[in-house]
Amino acid sequence: MNRPALLLVLPLLLVAGCAATDAGPAGGPRSPTRGAEAFDQRAAQIAEAWRPGPDWRTGYVPLEGPTVLTGDPSFTPETEAAFRAGWYREQVGIPPTRVGGEIQFPDGRLTLPLVSAAEAYRQLDQGDPLPCPGRPKQPGRPTPGGPTVEPGPDGWTTSSTQTACLPLTVTGVTFGAVPVRTSRGVAQVPAWLFTIKELSTPVVRLAVAPTAVTPVPEPTAPARPLPDGLVAAQDLAAVDGARLTVRLGVGACDTGITPLVWERPDVVVVGGGVTRATGECIALLKLEPVTVTLAAPLGSRPVLDVFTGAPLSTAPR
Image (tube, rainbow, N blue to C red):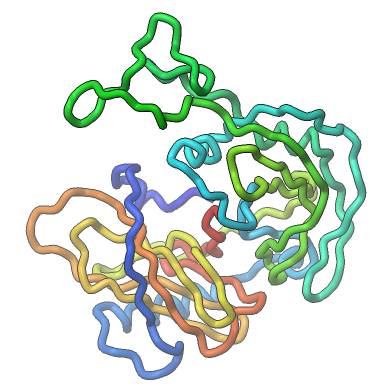
């Protein structure tokens, strides 16, 4: 789902924040926060307007993307770039045979059509890397006619550890199931696990056919913009019982960043409060992770953004 236009006027460069704060138990005493009253009023309206269709409780509505990692992949800058861009090459045969399977939800099971490993790989592979001037096409082999040294901060220097511009190498594929956050809680979802030579954990592509995936409902948010001093939530970085780590979209010079949360038994609304800079400041959107603690474990409740009213998806793992 596209992020709101209000945030897209900022440059596309995103800078991840470092520190996380704790909002304290929802519904308990809260320190005076700029915009807290305005947040509570808008959050109540967002929650009241939330009216998902029947598929929210009966179908398959994933709240994270179809490509996931189940562990630490031990990325290097180049392997992470290849993963984000979808650059792959296969060194094994990838079977075209479709298999059967079902999703196991906390409240039941659902049988859905799945894609084959070959179809999953076609969805995963987004092409080849762009040429890198002065870089070998194969590890350890200099580019014919190209330089054998790399430009460093003080000029041209040799680099014996520089990796070539290469896609990730698929050396195996297996069928299994992985945990996925859905509208019905964390479910075990059929998936194809691609073993990657350059990574320490497989790259997982969910196997549910796209035609069987129910999209997230369109949000119904108040037409007016956020009051000054309030910021939107961009995505969920982590869920651990009653503790949520949320990434807020804040300005480069914002200070006093404070997470805000409003909850009731069927829904949670999150956002943040900030103090705006008074002088000139670069127009740069930062993603600032903050932590909130709910009054009860999240369970299958949706987490809605206070700006758009849309349910937050889990950040790419």
